[in-house]
Amino acid sequence: MKLYIVFFVIYFYSCNHYPSNVQTALHYAGDNRRELEKVLEYYRESSSDNSKFRAACFLISNMPYHWSYPAGPYYEYCEQMDSLFRNSEKGDTLVPLQATKISGNFRPLLIPVFDIQTITADYLIWNIDYSFDVWKNSRYLQHLDFDDFCEYVLPYKCFEGQPMTRWKETWSHILRGELDQISQIDELRYNVRRAVEATTYVYKNSDSLRMEVRQIAGMDHIDLFDIKTLAIQPYGTCLERSRLGVMDCRSKGLPVSFDFTPNWGDRNGPHYWNHVYVSRRRSPDFEPFKIYPGAYHYPDTPMAKVYRQTYAPHPVLMEVVKQGEDIPPSLSQLFMHDVTCEYGRTADISIPLLSDVDRNSKYAYLAVFDNSDWIPVDVCKIKQKRATFYNVGVDILYLIVTYQYGKIIPISDPFIVDVCKRVKYVRSNTTKVQDIRMYRKFPAFYHIYNVRRNLCGGVIEAADDSLFTNPVIMAEFPMDNFLANEVIVTDTVPYRYWRLRATTKKSSDFAELYFYTRHNLTRISGELLYSISPLRNKKYDTPQHICDNDPLTYFAVENTDMPRWVGFDFHEPIAISKIACIRRGDGNDICPGDDYELYYWNNRQWVLHERKTADHIYIDFKNLPADRLYFRDSHLIPSI
Image (cartoon, rainbow, N blue to C red; front, side, top):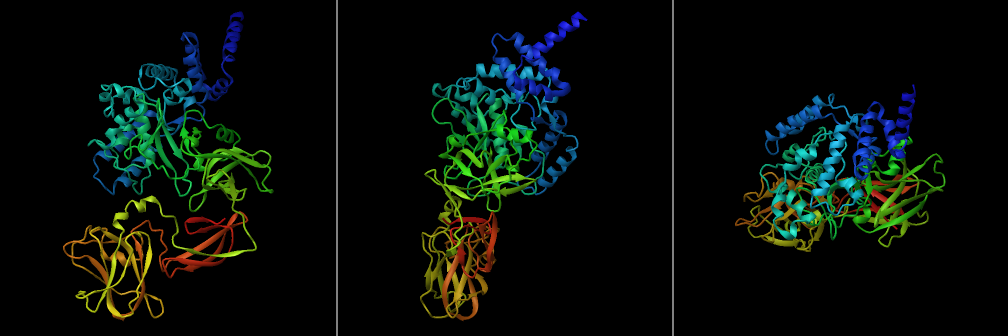
């Protein structure tokens, strides 16, 4: 009995000498508690210093809520996906169906388990010892302090779901690119950025890697966390490519992180990429298979919030979870750290909430608009009827919301944090009205400018015969205008045949062409005519696209030995007043014949002002309440 009491006292004394956050984590371990205590006891007794004990405490204290797939069935799943990818051809339409079927077969076997309830002492000790050896011996990790080491090197996994295996060791010898060669050059031997570039160089320059920068429709598969399988899949979103980049680089002892924005500041969708923690100068970001570290990666696109995935959880989000409240899907990644200030100018803001906010609401979310919904991108605790957020991206429109039962509830007026870091509210004016003319549903972004060489010029000709034997130039589209535009026809002579012809040796890609009569400015259509010269691309350049009412399809009018043109037979002489065109673009130009709705923000909701059909490449809305936030189809227009 005395021996039992002595043992109990020693055991109780030792357990209570763990840090409080470790003791809390051990409580979550359940029957697996003893495995974790073995690790703590091992390092407290055997380490010459306490760094490995501290590392064990870091992993264990932050382990609750981390989860993994069971390794056995998961890698069987990866083998089947690997076989599917290797035996498929580029553009194989059966890949999505087969991948979905394989995933369906394995879902009953891949039941997630919490790491803290299943991890073994042997595995955790191996991971800690291996990580310290890498930190000590890698020439690319010498600049990391202990806290950096805990996030970039120590974790036994990179992503939730990734099985607990010795992946660091197993993958260290594959997909190395030119990492081993650069060590021969003195200037590069300790250069972290160049080491990451040398490793990821193989992504775009290897016949064995098949991933392309594109999405594939219909894919519904279990996430892949095996770099060999990821590398040969025939497609890749930014999410999948960035996962590969992190797992590959970290297995080589390179300090690379997984960064992301929950939603762009001025358009829809999240984005993911990688970041290199270098030893000197500015730490660069990059997107695997697309650009190398140090190249420009969306330098001009507004980002409200940027996060770095970490092993330690986000403190406020973890508090929300412990309170039993719902978290918006856009912030479901619990393990992350705010790094917005590393990517651009930011401001700290404190926003007063509307007076009737539910007193039971404890947390507020900072939301941006994604062209259809408000998307939360940050969280804070509500204090004294205010929501305070730090490091908020500037020149972006925001709204403060709560999230209850899967619904967004506005609790502030919309506001813009301008480039001078001032908060400007978009509040209604009940005494004034205004008219608006709109030419697009959405702003013109740089991807249109990138194809501007195909969007120049074009001439309108008319004739009395279908062969255009003696054509008369009636109008010419500007050479430097590559958005939708109109040209006025000054000649009043009627002609039966009208056509569009290129004016330069470069391609002139047109999506839609519209003719308006001089008599009453009505839009008319005719029988399609086109030249017999070969098409540049039989799938994308067909003449029928010039009048299919689809702005995303186009006809390429290009000069060759035989003039290329497309035109119309109106079956009688017609005097034309103007011709409008929509160039090849993103489909966001106003299209004649389409219906549009305009809403304005009022009393925490969108209110329909008017629904009407466009007659031109612009649309007019009249008598709108002034100084509001407007929304038409898929775009916001602040008016302040």
